[in-house]
Length: 152
Image 1 (cartoon, rainbow, N blue to C red):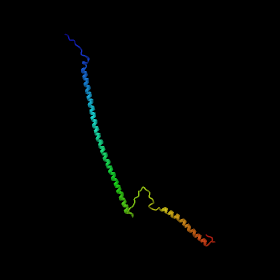
Image 2: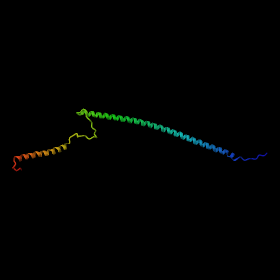
Image 3: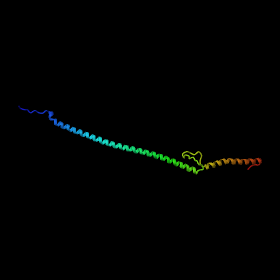
């Protein structure tokens, strides 16, 4: 019996090549998967670091707000204490034991000192008609005593 050489089918000849391509594709897919896992781990590490930073910032912000509140309260207490000490110093220095502190932004109802130029104008303005009246009466009185004598 004679054996004839039969050619292998085409798919059998390409089987080693297909296996090699499949193994290369699998190796490439594993490398891509490993790169994606590494990226995810790196991003997770970065996220955890940023979470820690944000938590630290939130803690510092809370501490800052607490300190500012305490500072504002202390400042208000010192201002109140200073105002009371100032009021007591004024009440001790004045005749009135319970002096009222006025707000410097509010204009006073009446001036603290008299306006001297205004007083002089009032005195001179009111004095002239009075002097003229006295002089007029004196002249009229003399004229009544001596009605026919010319004046002058």
